[in-house]
Length: 369
Ligand code: F6R
Ligand code: MG
Ligand code: MG
Image (cartoon, rainbow, N blue to C red; front, side, top):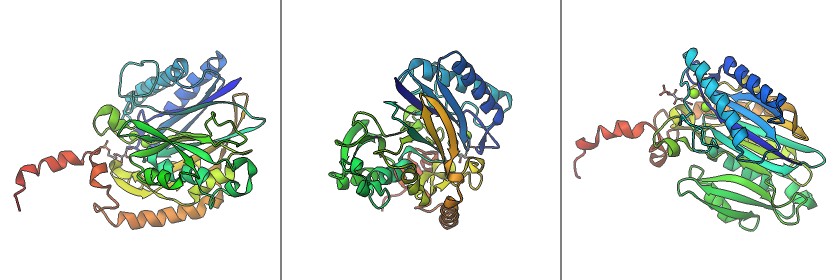
């Protein structure tokens, strides 16, 4: 049997402002997914949140892009939206950009990362949930996991990883993709993914000769961009990712290690600012200061024929305290720039925020020089 693991997520309304997903919405999700599990529609589920986003981890034997699984998540978000409206929560139904489900959540607002594979003897997976940032926020850490021998020791030490890894990179503006092999094409790969608002790592595959089949993804990231769907600024594309670990893949510790460096990401406050991403345990996934700073949560599971054993709330570990302290220092430093770049995003990225509406008013006032 092949197991499918999916994270399907949406912000369907939060309190207070954009801080937190409401417990009543999470209860609805647990109830609906619990029923679906009982009816054998799905194998297992876990309901989580990162900040204002509701994240549904779902396992099934149905493959990716499955209408029933996506439809179930869609129904949860619709019910959640109803609840959010009844509580007058902020941004109720925000990510539900369509009224009609068409068989797949893709292009309808919710974000999705999923993969299907034959479970190995033991199958550890880490589910990453981010808030107040964009899919490109995963470029640096996912590159480090699978491409950087200074971060992942296995690339040097483990004979099962000598075949390297292939990165599937999306050009999210050009709607194209390219496969790049590491380490052979390392420089070209970095040339692309360093431009994280345009080139986004979608999947990573084991290279030839590795223990895990090359056809099975080792990592997958949600790459949905809301402004591309809605044609306007409607909130941020807070991404999620799933990474498989151990036994010929990066170990769970190597998967988590890149987050010891709280790198700068885009999406803080009004989707318009750069700031450090702070790795936190579940209880600290609350975006307060200046609607942030951006957060990432890591939930570790063992898969048991699709059953989710766990999670381990990995970033709750004190070993990430120093990363949090660094993130807070960087947050102070960045905040002092106020409206100036590079705290504020570059003009190209500000195109997708509410700023163009403000600048439009000044258009007629400009004189030739
Ligand atoms: C939302 C977010 C927030 C909002 C900001 C303004 O996830 O990042 O920073 O952009 O609070 O929200 P509105 O304009 O909806 O009041
Ligand atoms: Mg919100
Ligand atoms: Mg959010």
